[in-house]
Length: 291
Image (cartoon, rainbow, N blue to C red):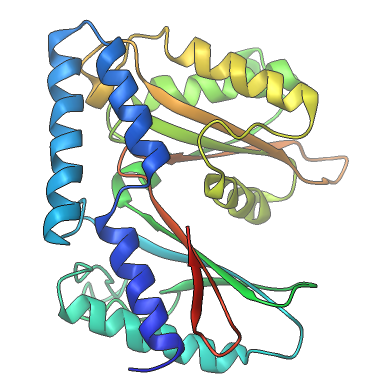
């Protein structure tokens, strides 16, 4: 491998094996704040797992998840086809090395492709922007947390949720209650208001690229993020559903334009194994900075 393939392999390795510092710090603080024995034990196991994964350069979770890339490039500098080819080379190599689990299944046949490559895998969001360098962000999103994502169409009579921010709040809390511990709590919510069914979900996942504690620049959304985090953590679902004070680590909310007939609330749930990393590189693929 060379150039982009080498850099993307290293990005995959770091993302799969090294829990980001902000997430690990939040789990350590949750451990200090917890009083429930089962919740405390669950958090201690998560932290020990993170230490082992980092030290041994092994996956944080056996489910290495869907491969989601966001690529921001200067116009006319990097070929999208060449980048995709380099990503495929890096992914196949990472799978062979055990950095990624063989995790891509052909839907109709049920056959595992063996290399994490197939239609729809990986997912690459490509954006040409005014910048000199290239930023590649990666999330590995496991199936457990993906399964408890939810989408609502407002108004929703069952939740008494109208087309307003209080309606969004009711949807988010309902999603957390329905998830219980199945999404491997404590988790993080990405909530997209508006858009259509597809772009709402896409936006909700891109919101998960934020760092913990990073509030929306829109004051009313930032206020709702703080309120939802507080209210979700009073539900006593707790780590892995064992009860306790820490059900969520954070909430991120964004908005998209919508048509008058639709008001969607799209919610993506991210588990405690919050695997996201970035690399800033030259157009040649040479890394400049890891984040």
